[in-house]
Length: 401
Image 1: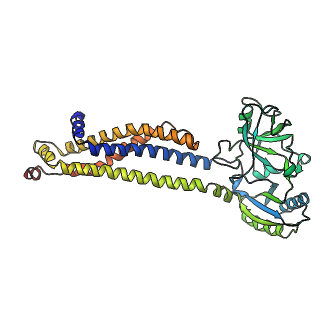
Image 2: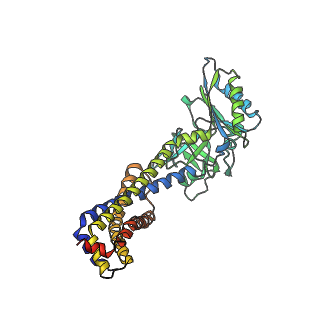
């Protein structure tokens, strides 16, 4: 099949072809970026957290008594929770991991706090924190009981030691062994790294520093207290009920606000991403369907307008497959123009999204795969009208002259 005469025919009736090409171009740009965003969000939501999420729950308590003694109540609650059958470990924590809310700091590698800072999420936990989370030390040591500091948040003074994640260590001390290295927080007081955890995710899943975390040996003695509780597999829900009852009956001058699983907090944080994924998937499906209908409509219109031409070709000896090939080639030309323009649109749209929403740049292979998919969509969409055109009997076409 020669392409030049088909292309010349398109130029003589170019309005429909131009509109479909533009539609294909926009479809390619939108679909490539939508699928990339969907894949990127799914990967982020499914990545390892470094925690035993399925067996963790969070107890949130609030004081009401004017005689409430935070440190005494926290120590009493910790002993009570650790004695419950099925509990692996318990630790206080100033915030809830994977919850979308927490504490972050900008850290420096020099006491003058000059140069770019390294952002990191901050946990404040006792010596049971790592075991409670289910996180594993890959280097160094854990905190000791004597190193835990009970502090009032209003007069907070950061400790001189910390456990950090591998991601933080590589960012702060690239190419170096982080053990024994120091970094600086809000003042010139150095913080020495005593342990490294390979993986531990923080509070904000969409933040680029989500895997950069620091754990300080601090317990905040304040009216609002949170406890992370890790249970044996399969016993979480039963332990939650016992813990809520025991803490409610402890009469330390506070009450249980709520007890929720850690995966409840994670799912709550990911609600926006789930909604975005559904919206993008539905939108992508609708755009593809509309594009396919547009191709079918143009091809059907072309068949109805060229009945005489098709009949004449059939009468001169053209086979059915020649007619099908004609319309397939015509559609391939229209689609090729569209995907060529769409490739430029896709890159421009991604640049705008990266600049405005700080999403990662699109991987290069999404556009070639998108082009192949739209070529396939175009050929499938035009197949019906092409077969209809090939079925026109030469006699009927000639009698219509």
